[in-house]
Length: 301
Image 1 (spheres, rainbow, N blue to C red):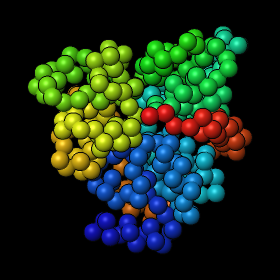
Image 2: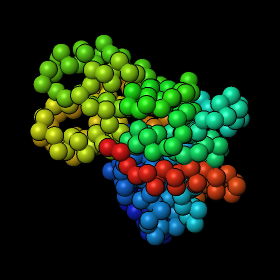
Image 3: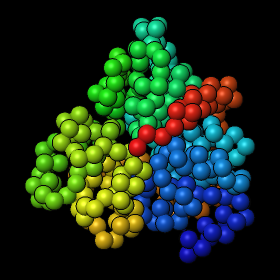
Image 4: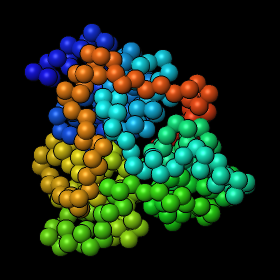
């Protein structure tokens, strides 16, 4: 069985497997740790593993390589690209910074290492508000997610200059779909991701990161939930809360890039030690400074 071969290879390579909450079920099941992108990288940094197999998308594996320079980071499938991360480059960010010389750059972790290196501080969906409010500057260039930028803008007195990027899986969850789901399940709580459109967040009961949703669902007294994020998270929510019911806000909220990692690709990654994520040291050091500044601020939800 592929699962048995993966266990053998993990021991041989002194490896750990990290799986994002949006991965397919069998990948989540074989993982040593499941969670959001930054939380997984932090787990990896604290482990004594020599090899990290990151089952997620490209920027997540890069974040692990930034924080774990003493370890080898492998991405099982090179086509696992984040479309939102591709909506901004270091060059385009430098041009934006020239337009607003007094602004600070807050960079969502869903970005490349090169973009992080051009930023002052990173944030996650759970701590974006906390990060922005921790800054002494009043003018913030927020990249690359305009929906998360607008969500933050509603919770701060600072001037937010949003970049025109978005996550397709979240941006195309529509208010009408959520209202229809609620009409079918009137007792259900609506939990959505801050990457959703503002009109979707406004009709939700709560807006959370993926890990925030998982923690909240466990402690909530509600028995039914409508989940407004990528549908892969439903697998974990249902496994960890068998007495509760979870429904997608939209059946279309699927990220193709999150579904390309499979068990046979994990086997290949460990057998052939590919595909290794390498980041030029000058970029890694600058990107790590932005991540470290964020980690000093701490989590949000």
